Image 1 (cartoon, each protein chain N blue to C red):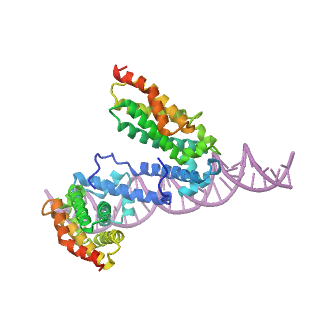
Image 2 (tube, chains in turn green, red, cyan, purple):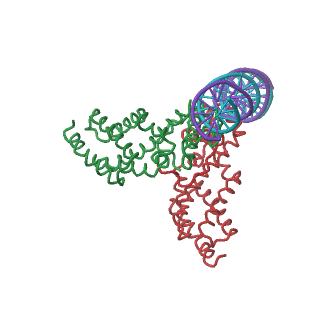
Image 3 (spheres, rainbow over the protein chains, first blue to last red):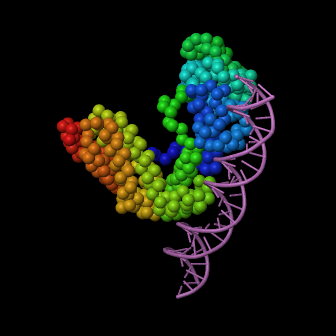
Length: 207
Length: 207
DNA sequence: ACGCTGTGTCGCTTTGCTTGACACAGATGC
DNA sequence: GCATCTGTGTCAAGCAAAGCGACACAGCGT
């Protein structure tokens, strides 16, 4: 109602339209995956659900594989948003921030239909690979974002330490999401206990 | 993170793109109006700011007048959202819902740059007319939405009564937004006092 | 070996945005 | 009064993106 806090440097239509196209397609695929296996969802289905032609889909994402990669990447981005929020809510205490973030992540992952589809395991092996064997870009990106938010939150942290911590956390997060050992909160607490001392040490004498 | 509560019946890209175009253009105009008078903002300015050509703007909104009308209508819609929220927060007591809604509306109107531009009065007479002399479609629509939310909130209310009340409220709201007599909360309280008995009567013996 | 289905590509058509030009009306200056 | 300038609204031609239909190719089941 009031004017936007700060002007977000208006996005020109052409750019916004392109993004809208991609999002529409990815959303359409996501919808399909709630009720059907990835292997059963054809490119034609996705295009149809998005209201565009198959060719437009192929032009935007060069192949089915690349489309799947984009799908995985965007889903990861959503999780990262939630995680960043969780970290932001515990700026005072890194260890509890870690626990909270991990908890939020696992909780969300457990409820996420795309993740469930993958973990449940039938017909989505190709998608699974995007988070593991072929997951380098995704892990990379997630670790980067996590590093950024950490460095911003706790200035005493040094970049190499943050990078190591981030990458391990991301890998652990993916691992537990793919194969939970117990309730989310318990896992989160365990990880926090495991890595807490390391973090405390980093924060304490800055390196 | 979790899947959307209820599937919002995915919008096909072509429709979403069109809406995006309209929104981009309207937003662009809104931006301009923060710093310049309506009379000084040309159609070319708006198209440029939105990143499209002037012709595209003309095709989407047939003329400058119709563009202005759309601008006013959309701004009204924003206010209605806020008002509907306020009503929803006071389902137990119609009179206080009315007061709250009116308060929210006047408060928001006072802070809204487009409204301020119009009320402040220089070079926006044409826009002002869209809320008054040429405001029939806008008043109509606002009253309808208000009626709908009222009927949904208080089932005992009968449609004709709700329609009368809604239209009067909309007219009063516009009037006070255009020409405030005192602080928003005081005005809201006065209106609530004025119409409270009528409402109580309607709710009490259902007609 | 055969038909079936889905991926990925190609060329043609169609749609929609852009560009540049124009007529017209109101305002300003000489 | 006439000339100029600016902004609105319209037009035709150009162009890029999306749609449509057809095709080759690979995998799969019969």
